[in-house]
Image (cartoon, rainbow, N blue to C red; front, side):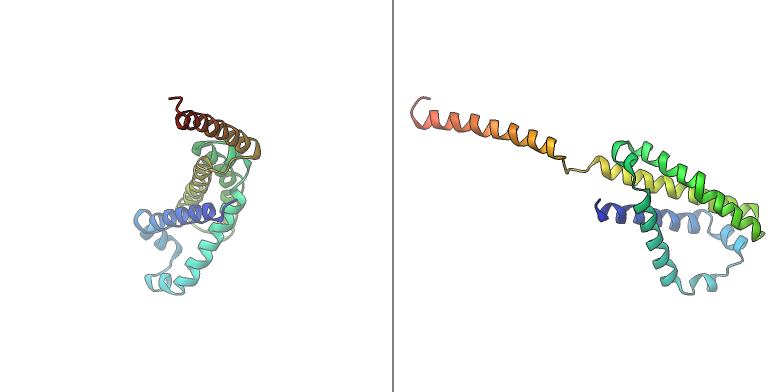
Length: 164
């Protein structure tokens, strides 16, 4: 597994979070949580740093076999299952006990859903472009190219010996 893939998936999820909690739902989310602009800016580096680290961890554990064998949609689907089966139910349980609004649940659950789809889709997309062949495939390529080298060497030898 390449850690670059995980880094790209975490960056994509972070970008989604930025868009989700600023342009799309920022003001509503802030109103529903009661967080002021000043509070939102307090400790922002630590908050973003920990959030990014957690996104990296989620990408790492989302990177299963289905990410290697499927399409982008297939990867997004399987990651979305994680959101539907684990993340969103846990979020709802916590928010119900904390007496949070239904609107906040929808905003954060929607983000969790999209977040997992992005992570899964990105991980699957990057697997589609994985250029590291298995041993059997590499051996076939080597045999093919060795055959071409031998063929061209025969042509060159024939040309050099005047058999053109």
